Image (cartoon, rainbow, N blue to C red; front, side, top):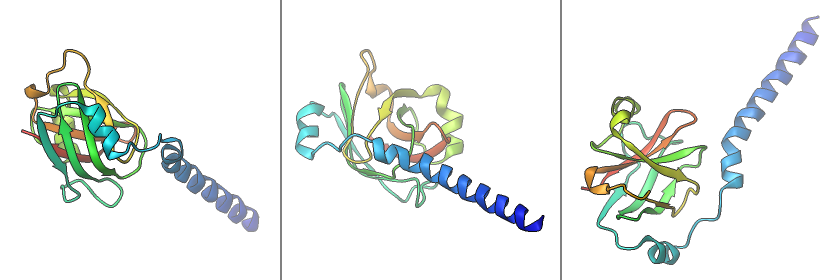
Length: 156
């Protein structure tokens, strides 16, 4: 009986680990190819502001980070850099700089969700019609599925 319990337990543990790895790996496997820097420059239009994603933010860690230059304009927000891979990333604009999950949750009602981040390198996200990025000062990448802060940058 004890041998059977150990066997069932070990198989359930292996299944749980496999499931967790699948959730982490699936977005990486199905992500579109990263845009080349020259393609982003051609698509982004005039950027009014620039900022930098840095790994050293309070709630950034080995699994949740971003690095590179962010370009914010009236028609698009783009990154020449990289993000830690993960599922369900969303790009937000915030009226205040945020670097923790608690601050994000506190300010989320005042933020604007711009769109989905579908690649982990060199992304370009269109700004929806009628959105004025000058009403905000910070761009944030947030993992909606797990409520995880990824990165942020103040652009004005």
